[in-house]
Image (cartoon, rainbow, N blue to C red):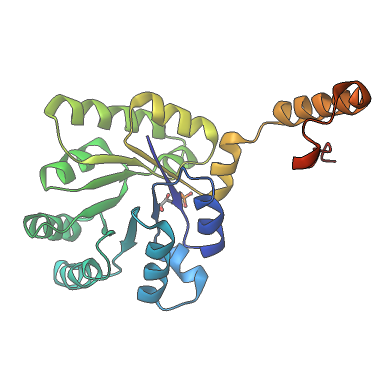
Length: 231
Ligand code: G3P
């Protein structure tokens, strides 16, 4: 499973990249607006930070002509930029045209299996079902994800499933168990994937016991600096 960060914040992206397991970035107009910088410059800065990783940048037009104009422009910014388009009728029309031009498109705001089926047929590179936002309205985002995985497998669609709007580590685990190609998550959720209170408590105990017995243990690690339990 590929891990993408769902953020446009450069500090978070730098932090995330330092772990060596982030494969790309997704942004949306809300996330970009928070950064208060020119859109193109900001996307290019993100591309430089993630090196080979794919970076989704979203159009803001809602008519086919406008979407096509913005998408063709965004696609020239960087070889790793993926154009993100909302799954509205005009967006699907634009997708059919852009996919024939070999422009890679991430179809976003997907909330139903029929939407996912249509965008796969129209040649989407990624499909982004929003899991958490379905849960927010009392529906079941993970059931949608499972339906999409079944449909795509049944017909061998090459569209990659990008599980979006993931709100907690269990969403990520469930998406991984279903074989979603990518999970995109806010930095906070990414951190929660590997932080565990029992790990911290266990390590503190190990280091306390080590300290207590230090004199008998020799000074093998002295040159590298002995670890002290973190408070
Ligand atoms: O970028 C799209 C998506 O991941 C948004 O997530 O948490 O705002 O529903 P959220």
